[in-house]
Image 1: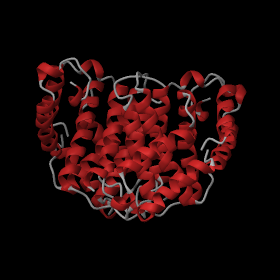
Image 2 (image 1 turned 30 degrees about the vertical axis):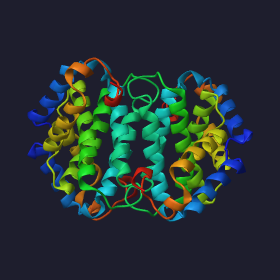
Image 3 (image 1 turned 135 degrees about the horizontal axis):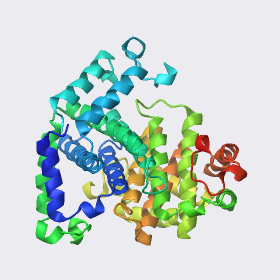
Image 4 (image 1 turned 120 degrees about the vertical axis):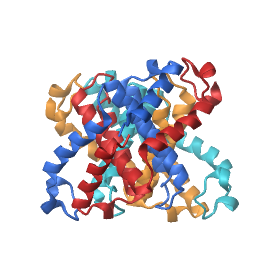
Length: 106
Length: 106
Length: 106
Length: 106
């Protein structure tokens, strides 16, 4: 993630509007949860969905995620890769294949 | 976002475990909301936070976002940039600067 | 809702622990969203669920709702009834029967 | 909670519209999370809030909670009281007073 292009575009958009003052870590985390609720609303009554609508709501979640990563001074790509290594230890291929159980129930 | 490196690593992780069967669009959207709740928990009682914990929870939200983008066949970077253009029209710099109001209240 | 018994029990539980200081309206709203995420986790990979687990998570959401109502000085029962009247106007029986569409799409 | 009055009013509202078919446990849990996100939006940029707006969003969360309790065949009041007994064991007054730490960090 966070090809420089998208992350830079989002950051400069915020800077131009002087919105950084509202973007504390806790406000951005609330914003991610709010947008995740809007994404979920696309599936409120079942699995069928409007692709354009879902794409737009996913973009909103991602945008606030990029802003929070920026605020924390971390690279979105790198934290995903780092977390994947932790998950890899919890869910070895041979035990986890085809299972949706939590690691402590495998 | 979605430098090929992180998105590819996540996708191959899922493929190795045969987890794609659980990753319908609605299940991934639920997963994003669930992880967003865990991120929010880092700020449940106030703005102070543990950076490592927040980073790990943000990584979980981002990981499911990448998987949903992959499932939808869209590029995470591109949908963020596309949405930014929509937001740009709703929040012109001269009206929105320093305001946290919604566009219809500006 | 809010038979006096449950609401009183919850309020006195909080008072005994001097937790009211953490229960600002925004912290309680975050808490509701966090617990709603845990409830949703019971259904992360599909519609099957563990009844005892769902009941416990629903109780957590309800508990924070009671505390927020208490904090706002409103009666949980009454606000549900008040909102029902608003919804009744948006969704007349003859138009809404058997439809999951939003009122503006009916 | 769940004075018969509010719970009955909500249930008959749903029955009149033949909406029970959409109200599976997982759809109701998604609905609770969606409405919790709307409640959280009242506090997106800070602790100040519009009381009428918060009250309306809280009512929406509570309404779906009542519907889920109804669907599960449990009494909302009783499950709150039951859960309170579990929490009481985790957070004894003498250890928990004035602390917002999780029980395993007390």
